Length: 241
Image (cartoon, rainbow, N blue to C red; front, side, top):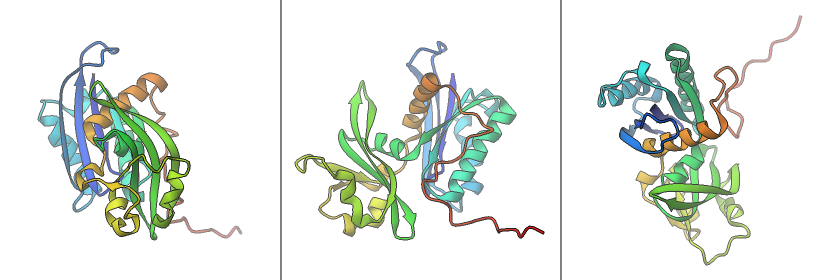
């Protein structure tokens, strides 16, 4: 089973593939490849090219992909639209199944630490997308439990995420929001390095496979990004005759 994974929720794009053993219930990885790089000039210009490049490293083509896993948000409005459109396009043209994975959880799983992890993404307007998870490594892979639900808040309200949590337990903070609002978050937790702030394509693929096995594929006809906050752009209101 060949899984193609990518994330366009942040400005640090990630893409990769994981080839599983032939048995659909086998959790062993046969081989994999992944890349991570800033989305410059943008995801629209870089995503398909990077997917093609990373697939070529294993001698694969898009038609070989069985499952497409991608970050469904929250994140940048344009990035999310590009990601979901690309996933749906691959499904339509190649017959692959698709599975969207919550971006904040994917970042928490990619943080590389055990304990409480708060992934924060810059949401613009002086706000952040935020959530809190408890992460634990099991057999070298992260398991994740939501502690505080996804929300959009002002960085000054970060303490809302830690309400009811022992102050003696460290909180690891990561993501573009953590980098942008370091001063506002000072003393509220351990701010992790920049490289932990975007989904790891390898872990994204395996998490998506787990969700796919438990829930089945997403419906390309009805699946929409998880914006959390309504996008700034709105359709014009038409006056009825």
